[in-house]
Image (cartoon, rainbow, N blue to C red):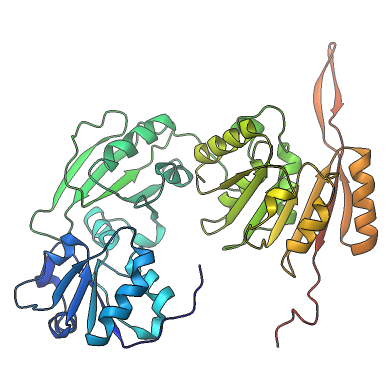
Length: 415
């Protein structure tokens, strides 16, 4: 979410670890002792010594809506903000940079819990997957699970390790080794060890990082488009594997981009779009509430619970949705005004891809191809099947696909 930066005086952002005041640099200590107000979580504020005489204010919940008013009230007198570890890595620093502007921040980072975890484990940080479960669904971890991979999980609380162990077991990674590193860098640092399927430890310290050694014999899931059809729960309304792979390649997902998946069916296009990169965004529009529930379950099972599902008929259900970078229409093409609404909503330079198997919808796509150009093609897939004692081809219904890039008008072009 982008907003105009809030003007005002500088703000010191200080990362602090479990080692508290002793682990801070001279510059970080000076920023805190000179501040008139310090904002932070209760745990972080409790780490400050009496020599820090600033007023201490704990963050309210929800946090983000309260930030502008707190900055406006306290920054003029000298404000410091406490964060866990590195403020710019899954920390408050990102929110402050977005709301106040990065030029107002003086950031004093502390080694992150992830750096400390890799130091304890002897893992190279650059090749270790990181998943935060702080304020995020547990199913977000699923996408990072691959045989033999190492994953660091930022815990939400003391119950997270047991929940992670249960998820790993459910997803076929029960033999994975788990290590829970509590209070990293502090005097009470403590480690727990076990396997996911037989996790023996009760809930411990809420300040913990979970290290996962994924079992080498866990299920293999590809990251390229075209997951097997049986990866999805479906009632038959599913863009089949080979056509789906071509469709995703044509949609061309990129980090940060938003997809509208209109006529979601089983949600396979939106799910695979989100699996392309953790910063991809997607909205699925599906008129049938039963299918909407199925889409939600598919997204969770395949590691992208962030998929937004809108239940309602298009084009009416499109009203108020954020501007898409790409639109896929997999159903309902002949609904009055649908193509017009999608085309009008699409950002200049955005991509539109529509698939159909009916002659009526094919005629519509042919007309739009005549008017707007792009590429019109027919996809045909046949599978070898037994024919008596021999083998023959069984042809699936051919799919007509129209794809086009919306032109950038002179008014839209950058100066």
